[in-house]
Image (cartoon, rainbow, N blue to C red):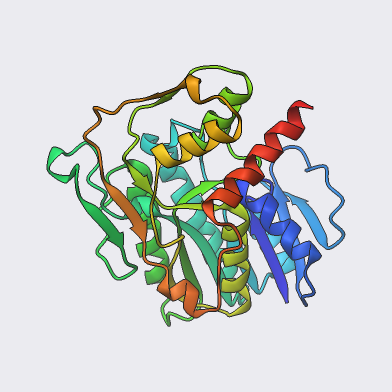
Length: 306
């Protein structure tokens, strides 16, 4: 079996290929990079240079390796900009062409990363400030951002292309954290500011989000691959953690409580999480509780500064 992974050098992808490289499996694993080949020593991974926006290159590579399975993680993810960027449309179109090439050469199982952003969360809407949103795979999508809209639109278009509903797994990933994440993301922001003894501002301390360590996300994708799961599936912890809890836990661990500024006047008390019963039915369990995961990320940054 031939497995092709896009976005293999990205945040989730780099953890996934490491897990697969250490795993006893029958896959021939191919991964793509766009500019500079990642510097790693993974013995099972064969790297290919590819620009997903060049149709002829995509066609040529798919024809050459004829992957039976694809895990498609590549997308535009520049922090703070991707939410409402028109680049999402470009990535949707590139993803559709990738899927068509995959099916043309008899591909069997296409796993694509969706997002919790496809669900409605009531952001910036006063009537939902105290609401709890349990996101189920059967819920009707109602995205609030351009990013969410194009992820959902891609899902709809791929479903139509997958006529017999035997190829597509759509994995909606919730709130990520862990080593090598963008340093502006909340968990890393708090930890790095603590280490540097800078002020930490938590504007919405009572907002509850569904945080899941990147290692557990990568393991979920591996399980979806191994179980040949078809359909929509949430990759989530199944519960919420408030930003207040995370910031207070980090500052206590790093002895910098005095640097934390909580906006206790915030009215945003939304609780947003994904129902993960489908994922658990495959046999998945998370390795990292939130405290263990934060400790792992703290260790990562502390070692970086040593």
